[in-house]
Amino acid sequence: MPDSAVLNAIRAVVGERGLLTGDSTAGYVEDWRRLYHGRTPAVVRPANTDELARVVRLCADARIPIVPQGGNTSMVGGATPSETGDQLVLSTARMVRIRDIDPLDLTMTLEAGVTLQAAQQTAAEAGCLLPLSIASEGSAQVGGVLATNAGGNNTVRYGNARDMVLGLEVVLADGSVWNGLRRLRKDNTGYCLRQLFVGSEGTIGIITAAVLKLVPQPREVCVALCAVPSPEAALALFARFQSHDPAAVSAFELMSGPGIGFVLRHIDAAVLPLATHAPFYVLVELATPRPDAGLRTALETVLESALAEDIVSDAAIAESMTQRAAMWRLREEHSEAQKREGASVKNDVSVPVSKVPAFIRHASEACEALMPGIRPVPFGHVGDGNIHFNLQQPVDADPAWFLAQDHAIMETVNDVVREFEGSFSAEHGIGRLKPYMMASWRGGAELRLMQRIKAALDPNGIMNPGKLLP
Ligand code: FAD
Ligand code: 2HG
Ligand code: ZN
Image (cartoon, rainbow, N blue to C red; front, top):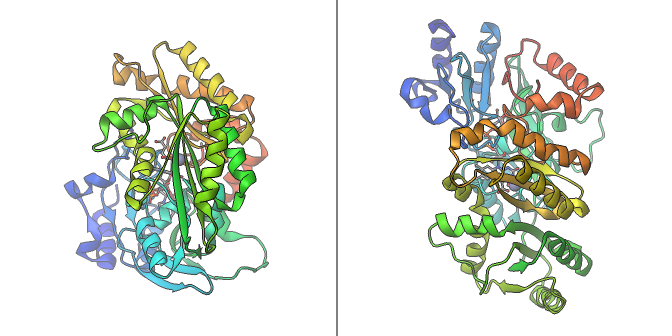
């Protein structure tokens, strides 16, 4: 517990508006999934990089642990303080300045607390696209998105958050500031420091600003929802779209019958725009900045041949922005609908794209053998091999009993992931949920290297202790 002299010194830096204590910390100490319920002496909300750096320096001198927090949407408890009550939450919510946007350079420079949605809107107003899209974008902040190297719906075309970063500004664990806000496309000057911080989950420094790459805004966007008989058919459809025009596929998402069922049951105004239900569904989005690219014709051509060959059993093409948004809602509301359906265990995993169908089959069988009545809900970014292989509790099971089996369930899924040479953490990161898995998946030289980096950059272990590394 920091003594009151340090808290007073922090208050002197950030002012009354910048320091929350007592009940006002409630929204900052629990994660979105409600798996972790922490405590904190204070939530510090600096207004700019200078204030943030001075706060970190005070914490470094007093050895006070810091939990960096953006939108607090982590799926792995990464931004939640521990139950010990001695970890300070450092929120970037007030650092919301867009410092620069340049449509010719195709870059924007912005502070860590800007929400992803606000960043996307600013880019759109300048005639550009920030091609990163996740269901939590209304709350998730640029700093958090970079610290977790978020993926999302457009990775298949544009890559992960990591691929959008040209420069960073970071406050290090001793309170010094590294200004690497360069917006150069070429800059071969030694170790790529910015990429060390992307995906580091707040364990070696706090990202305070970034230079992100933009792309030209699409002129034409087409979205279709397709019913497919199996994941094999979904991949066959993916291959057809890719061979038709790989530069046009901006999203290719898989959903299951049960997953769509939960959305229709729990989400207001959700409607399936197809005549019948199917075992699996695909949402495909094509987009292009090229004028007169004939995207709609391309979509229809591919779908017609897929329908003729029973790769697709039914399909609907969005005819308006409203219909497009309604189709995307069916996909984006999967997490919320699952939460309302009861307890679930999440497995954010990846396998080579070609192995997705076999992986889904084997993992479903293994989980059903482990726990009769368990309900697999595989969905996600099939175009890049990232499946959210989530398991819903059996209908009549006690949620607490089900959640107590989480390690056994995750291990069962991970055994299959290993079989297919995949990863146990595709896009959500490690956080507080998965550090115990690191030794078996990344042990030996790889983990030792990470531990040496951590020790070098955070020798007193004050940056987000208990997260990422075992
Ligand atoms: P937080 O949750 O606040 O923090 C996440 C981690 O980053 C923590 O370890 C924290 O300490 C650290 N951190 C936060 N800010 C900083 C900073 N400025 N500097 C250093 N470290 C920092 N993720 C995906 O990849 N793809 C998806 O499609 C996706 N969809 C989601 C849908 C829903 C409904 C929800 C709830 C989450 C989803 N996520 C997804 C997970 C999550 O939203 C993302 O990981 C997001 O990137 C986290 O951003 P945040 O600002 O909320 O970070
Ligand atoms: C998504 O793709 C997110 O919608 C969340 O990554 C996945 O709820 C989940 O498991
Ligand atoms: Zn996802």
